[in-house]
Image (cartoon, rainbow, N blue to C red; front, side, top):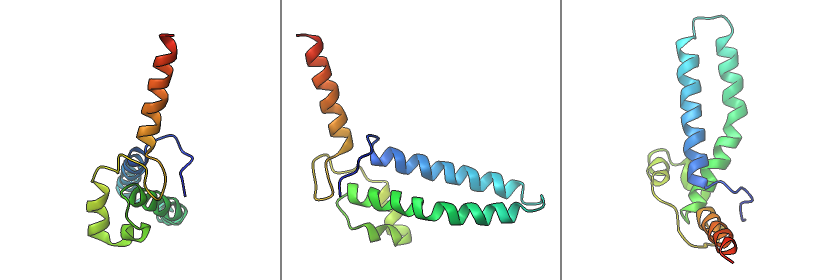
Length: 111
């Protein structure tokens, strides 16, 4: 299935990963406040499906099955690799599409 998002998958993945880490660290520091554990649990449950979806998209960007993301160490190591620079069975590389659109726009400026 091809992604309809313009942003490169690796950028989305790492932004979400860093925001989740930041949120976890903040909640860890204020854990002494009442009801923080409820907020922490709610956020964990609310963010699990979007997190899995982003991780699966990242694996597809690497031409790997999405379930590889569920293997803790291996999935993380794969996530650090650069994506496939060409079209694969999961769709076109978003970075390549953006580059093509930018070059096409530059070409029209010179006409």
